[in-house]
Length: 113
Image (cartoon, rainbow, N blue to C red; front, side):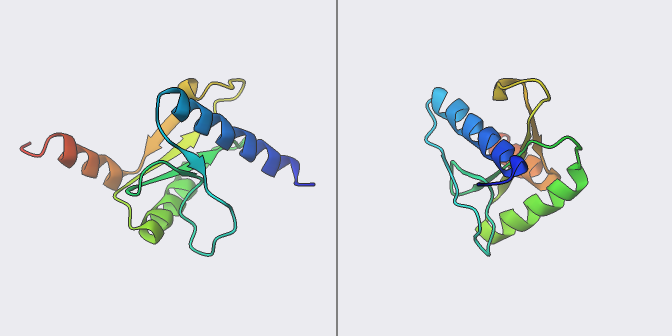
């Protein structure tokens, strides 16, 4: 039997996958335990998705970890999805980009800017 924290994280990851599928996106959970961690959910080769369901928010640590995962995957974009307390709907959760992901996104959507 897995720990309560693991079960909570698994539920949050499944909720994000179902949320993405609801909007027509092909997403699936990544098997845990890889020595080269590349996030929690696979959606696109150039994107790392990390899902957090924790009582204490630690964005600096999570963004440092996201940078490592992006390097492991050689991805330009990364997002930490943070579950909102009391909400089971990922549409109400926070989607946090690190600065390099934001800049890469901006370059892609506004290349002449």
